[in-house]
Image (cartoon, rainbow, N blue to C red; front, side, top):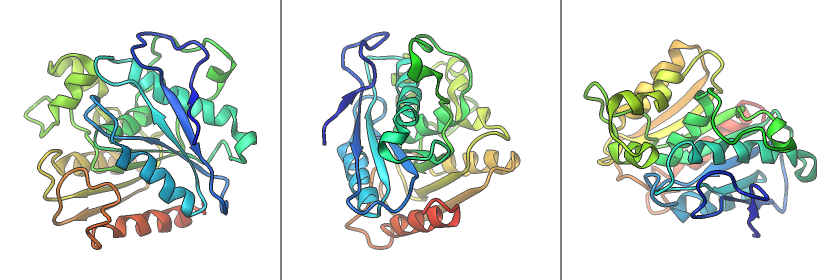
Length: 261
């Protein structure tokens, strides 16, 4: 698949150029689309949480896009700017790909899950937006798919993945990091969610998912969540673990439940 630059001239700090890569299904079954943010603690992007997800979705007839968003040493707002731009880019090219602008989901694992949740909850204006016609598109997704996501900021003894927040913001200072905490920013306009995690995850505590799901419930946001009892962090599709690998089937069933497939 060929990658496409998100901007003709990338704004902000540019030590790498953010791109988006379409994965077009051979047997397209829906006008929905999924935009994928790989995990990697905002320090790298894991291919098994990016291209591999997209290939799976395409095999199920769903158009997918993988975003190479900027990571360390880039700081906020670069990551959110790239995520918002990817959503706007897909909507600006919706007709070309046969996509319904009202069926655009974001998907992310670990820190990519934080980015997917952050773009679903953080509504403040950021630098470098509004530079062209693509930026006139809505940047709020219609659904969020979170795989063992980083959610909680390093405040109030939260079981946070502080390294992700440090790479995002340049600090672990609680008062700065909590501005980007999806649990604190969720409201009654946050998009519906599909979440999965393992209770045994040693890197990103499952409490991150429980707390975010609770915040969504408080705001009456439809949420499906699956917690598997065992399993390490960063499993991706979990092809070596048939029990955890069920999350892929559950996700497809969720698409059907919300009438996207």
